[in-house]
Each structure stands twice: as structure tokens, then as C-alpha cells.
Length: 254
Image (cartoon, rainbow, N blue to C red; front, side):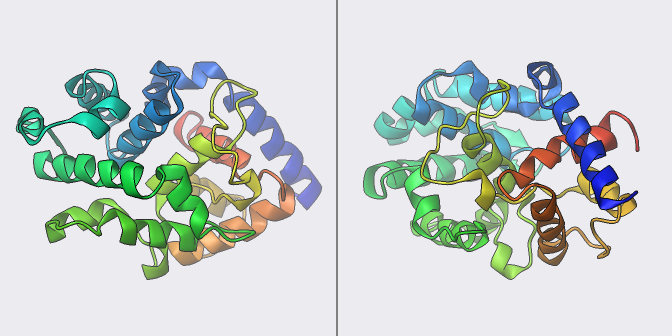
């Protein structure tokens, strides 16, 4: 395909999958249960954190987290007592367990009380064409409280070579506009042009078949390759192509 043909193909596929019916099988349906900004971003962050493995299992366990917070995550984060955290005792999603969830709740409380909330922390270190340094700095803030070393693996650091798929996905949810009813566009201090594509097995394989990536590993260097190519196709909204790459990989077995 020529560059023009590739752009037309990916534009069409993005439009095909960036629709509300996409939500019926996607974990993004969890934050769509809420209308308050803080509830959306907290539920989105926690859902994205466990977004690996079977998607039905992700949705089921994200639902369980919300129920354990009384379906009011922001209120729970701010006002919980230590004894309220006992309810997480049996929670587990793959390697993310009750100890991890308990720390995440404590850390989110610290972020909302002392750092102005999630959007503020990510925006503070954002760069004109990238949020990868901002993600790394976010991890530092997130783990500034006493914590177990094992919990740190659940927040990726792009400056240590990670593609940070789940956080980049969460940022897409918060930042891209809500015109199609899929992403939220509730973070106004960050622009869609700063976003990076969530890179995983599906999007990576499709990107390689289309010549967007040469690198074999789905790591930070591969993400930079993909970012560079997607920004050429649409510098203002490069991450809309996540819908195309994911849809082609998961639904069309491209």
C-alpha cells in the first residue's frame, strides 16, 4: 500500500470500530457507568490496571472492584477508613491481589488530596508531543507512600523500556474526544496529539504487517516507531488508529 492508501484504509477501520457498540465487549464499559469526572477517571484507572488476559474476566473483576467501593469510587477513595479496606481481602485478578488494590486505594487518596488528582499529576510533566516522561513521573508520585516492592510492577515505566500499554490506554480514554461516545475527553489540559498508542500483541502484530513497526518486541522502542508513523498519518489525533489496529487484530484476525 502507498502511504495514501494506508491512511485511507486505517481511517476507515478507525471509523468502523470507534463506535459505542465497541463497548459491549470492552473494559471501557466500566467507567461509562459513571457521570462524575472523578468517578470516571478512578474507575478507568483501576480497570486499565487489570486490563490484561481474558476480557470477560477483566470486566467481571473491574465490576467487582466498583461494587466493593459502593459504586462510588471517588467518595470511597476520599472517605474510607482503614477497616473498610478489609473488604478487598479476597480480591485477585491474575497477579494483582488484595494487597495491591489496598495500596492503590491509599495512593489514589494521596493523589486526590495532595496532588490535585490524576489529571494534574499526568499534566505536570507532559511534553508537547509525548506523555511518556509524564507516565514515568506519575509512577514516582504513585509510589511515594510506603509500599511493597511487588506492587510497583502494576504501573509501567516507559523510561525503563516499557510500552506502558495499560496507562497509554487509560490516557486515551480520558483525553480523546467523546464525539463517538467511546472515549471521554474529560481531561482538557492534555491534547490528543500528545497520546501514544496502546501497544500490545494484537496492535503490534497488525502494525508489523502494515509496515508501521520493524522492531520485534512490543517495548518502548517499538512504541516510539509506531508513534512516529501514526503521527505522520494524523498528527492531531494519532491514537484514533488504536481502534483500527486493535479491531483488525482481535475481530478480523488480520
